[in-house]
Length: 419
Image 1 (cartoon, rainbow, N blue to C red):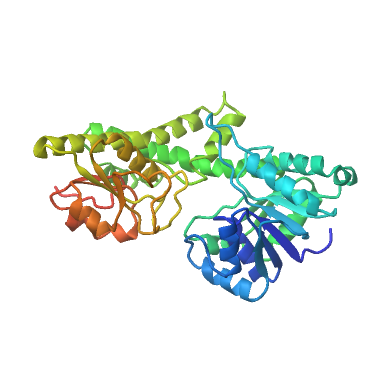
Image 2: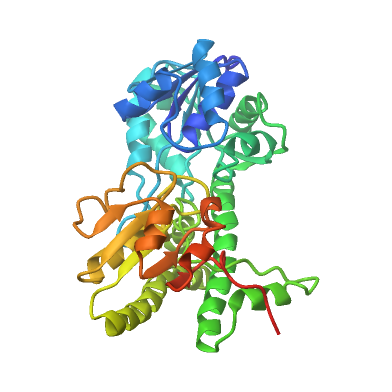
């Protein structure tokens, strides 16, 4: 293929927009594509529709310099990066409909010889399915055999995306050696990490394995927290002590596991190899069960309040995001816990607190017993304070909760060990 000078990024979400901005910052002409007109308008105005440190600066500069623009339809380009959602169905099987729709939308723009990269975290075979969809729509290109397909999964941490896009190593899987080398050349325009080449399915599986490794280890910590509760042991102290062993590094427990990656990707492996993925399945089940366990702890406190006051308690839910200091609510256990409490705690008021959003998310909006309030108001009004996300904004608020019933799922307010 010819040298890449223009790129179309399909999907301007948490990965697509940063990638588009980074590429534009490297001097390439980048066309952002998204089905959401609000997102398109925001990008064209040089603004960012979600919270990610430093992203606004990159977008503003790229748009002002004429290297980044957005539209709802893909134009012709030398390379296409598909960064669309990859959720799962109710039975936990992968939903590739967004990938297939992206393939059908860009097929008419292809002339032959382009590089098509799937960045979306995907089950093994997804990139081949993308190629199949495009070739079904364009049999002329299938016959010519000139399109290059690659898979390059993102490996970044929300809150540090703009740094890690540049510094992290990248895995590139190609449908051929030429495809892998072409994709490597594109990522070398901005990536300072090592770029490792492999085939499509191994690249797809590598990202799933990385997140499943994390999920299994989080499940161990979450299971420890439930065991420790039964044995009247401070799980955070327990983990801190155990981690003094030179070959032990236990992660921290929480209210569950969220985000589009760790909470989803292990199911792709389970679906691909259901009889063999036993530990991965068990870990997912442990982490999926943790929110209900947290709700049970709150119910114990609610019973105590009811007995003491004769009324249903007011409950503060501190944090709705899936991790600290961001506004990302995807697959968030904190949000699910808040919604479940609103539904199950008849007569109670749920005071939802999320410093990084301006309105209630859809699962809470419209409920008569849910209010979005600031942290101090929530703690002042609440009988029960449930700390679900260890946002930096909550770190110094423990004194305000004196005399309240507290369920701290993150250990942010735990007391220092005293003998």
